[in-house]
Image (cartoon, rainbow, N blue to C red; front, side, top):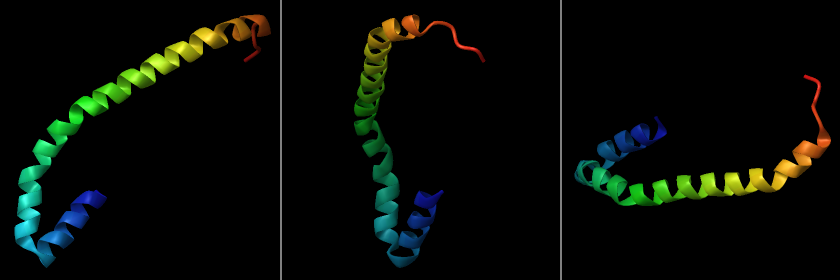
Length: 66
């Protein structure tokens, strides 16, 4: 929502730049998509490694009372 308001302010101040930004935004989004997917994959792998290393500690603690 904040990005929309900033775009509205930019549109009022300088509408040609706002229209150019509106046209370029989908291309920038497509360019950054592989980096987002890579970030999700890295987060998943690090979570898996963390779970594997912490599993013995969780097993030694025993059952918890909820």
